[in-house]
Amino acid sequence: MFKLYKKFFSSLKMQVKRRYLMLWKRETIEKEISKRRGECLGCGECCKASFSCPFLFEYQGKLLCKIHETKPEVCKTYPFSKEDMFPHAKEKCGYYFVKNNDREPKKKKR
Ligand code: SF4
Image (cartoon, rainbow, N blue to C red):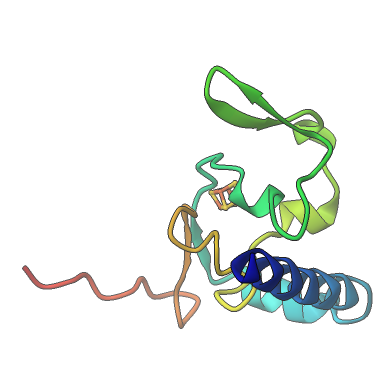
């Protein structure tokens, strides 16, 4: 139960912060999002943050968005930075961030 509260409040705090930035610090989002690489894998974890999005539905074992083509900016810009990633979604998310805009992260040595 404590885990659920923790997920709810930490996600809610992040959602409030990102809405504030969307409204008043748009340039911060644009700067940070330029360092984003990868792609959305459609896991739907970000759509199940503090509450499950009403436009989310399950189809053949996949989570899909009913309004994907016209979804709001706040959804399109998720995640705009590493810090913006919901803790519960970090592992599954297909996005990652580079430190410098023009450089890819160093590959792990094998
Ligand atoms: S958590 Fe990442 S990969 Fe999963 S739906 Fe959200 S943006 Fe896409």
